[in-house]
Image (tube, rainbow, N blue to C red):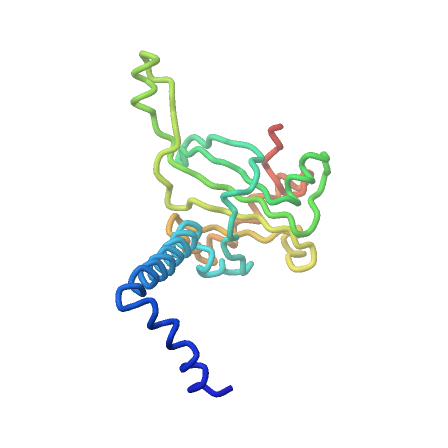
Length: 197
């Protein structure tokens, strides 16, 4: 292709826009590119999907996990004092809904936690302290269980991951305790959470 020939053919069209005719087009182009960059950054930052993998199991934060379906909610008292949402990918939800006793490979269950705090606004309406809501994220905000019966055969077919509120994985020592904690739920395929229809 002859570049000079193409340029000569395109030149009259470019010149017909005039000196000011290109400004609106250039402005729109720059605005669209900037908006796309901001949206891409926001999506990345909100889920930390490009962060480090958890030690031992090699699990990263799953993109889009906040859009998964709700399995159940829980409140942990004592030292944790948090409120939790347990979410599942499509395979997890299908297994729960069918009442399966074990989960298929590819199942992923996520646990999100927030500090359990009183709602000043709601309690004013009720006239007493009775309403509690999700507050800030605790240090260990996010956990995953990933079913892969071959890869994680030594831990009942499940891999585990725990991340802080900034998307950083916990250390190997913390991850080494995950399976032992889930052993009491062995008869339910090592999963504590029951489905709340």
